[in-house]
Length: 369
Image 1 (cartoon, rainbow, N blue to C red):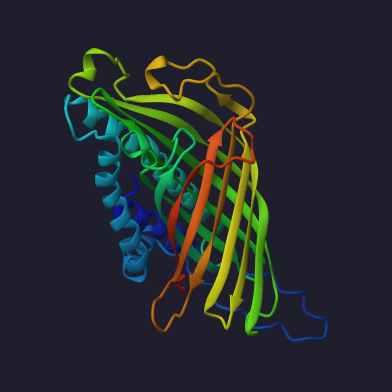
Image 2 (cartoon, rainbow, N blue to C red):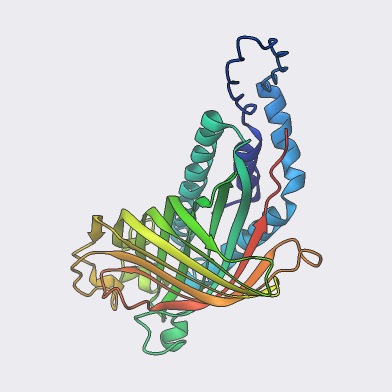
């Protein structure tokens, strides 16, 4: 699970560890012209100066850090309640809970941190024109195995979050982004077990082209579309009760992989804004997992999720909602939305994992030299 320190470290690496702007070579002077005075060159920052600047960035991103940190901590409690891992038998529920969170969260941290360091070492920071940190707070209420929301002891209830770092180079209409997240929902709860499902997806890189009308007009349209690389897992989660521990024998992680893989995909987003404050927003992500796919053979312990699986695993996600942004009131844009998502081999038009979502788009201040 992402932590406050992780966010600060990633932001500090990306936005403050770079070298000075590269100088453009001047055109050769004419033969009869006096030689121009040489312009003073910037002195690259030392590693210690970069470290100190990175520490100072903490004060420029408190909003993103607080929003991400609050929800990450809340998910610890929420997901324990969803899968009932706080209850005996011990310590299997605790081990399963934290092994899942370490798998999902640590991979996000390592991916984004590594990419940030590579960018810093290769390009520095002067190429960055805009940067946004996007946070999704997700509350699920339905999934495909539910006869109806709330059946079988709370079927469909769940929580999750996604977060992305989005960067636009100076003078460009292309946005580069990386991130990911996960959500977890309950399937059934009885005297023998609690059965849940979780889906975890990472986007190591995605590049979106922006198209827009006049953003100062009373009605403005912005669209984003482009390819990306996606990967992740869809798992069943089984935690037996004290009595059910004699019936079920889950692995120590309490995870049963259903789909796993990676593949290319695309994301499209549209925003119709009225008077620069209120907007209608929607996005669609689609990624077939060409590598990997569904796990063919399933344990009967995870019924009703043990059906025969075939075909190709596909990640798809749809969101639609209403956003509001007034920088004089709040330093970030807030969106209340509905989401539908699924990573499975079912028909691609089906997105059975549904819920409500609160999104925060936090503009980040890019430090100047």
